[in-house]
Image (cartoon, rainbow, N blue to C red; front, side, top):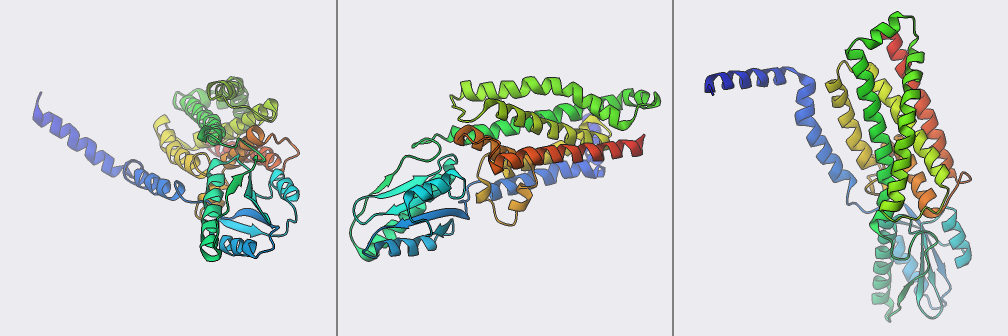
Length: 356
């Protein structure tokens, strides 16, 4: 091996990388941005969690508990629920994440929505801390009893929270990659030019591709649901059909977005350069690995722009809460994915028309 020739090749390649600003950004800036996003998105405590306190005590201890809970940065305290039954109804409607009963005598009762393990764990910690601080002021000792949760298991597993998010990510990511790479490949080998030369409209090309990829999407979504239920032993409380249709709609939204990326990319490698910066924020900001409520307030609006955020929340609501189309969260997920798909398809069509 000639060391001089190896050095010359390496120097030429390094010089070309320095001249390629996109490649430089991909190699240097993207890892830095991803690490920064990971630090922002993972491990923080959720905030803004609506939580009720039902004070049935006549000794002022309930007031001490409420005062301590008001100091929490995670909880938004409500004291306008007169009974536990009304508070549990509010939890069932998605208006509250939990409620604490402060009785005149006996154990405190904590009622939770356990469909999101990180959020319910945060509530338990905040309530225990408030009780400890109140007891240090008022004296005495009172046990805390976890009542049967409104949703989820009394001792939830992390996979119950994670599985709906992973299903969301898989449906979105693979649909995006499949569409992007296949469509760019046709542009690169000249197939698309020949189709346009035959008088085919950009909208017809896009809808044709979307129709073909839909057959693959059907199998993909079915396999994802099957593995989630059988492989991870998760019971779907709601409609499997509703889950399937929402997964299909998310896949279509990803495919339409992939077609838009393909209309801008000049090569498969450039398409991957565009896809990679998209996938990592989607993974971290959509509530897939960690609750959106735990993100800094300044970045949460960006999370709700992503169709995956609405879909992950709806998947959890269908799978763990048993909600259906009567739920606002599920309705928004359907409507947002549909609107996102139409908008992405429209701008992809306009982009191809300019290049035609």
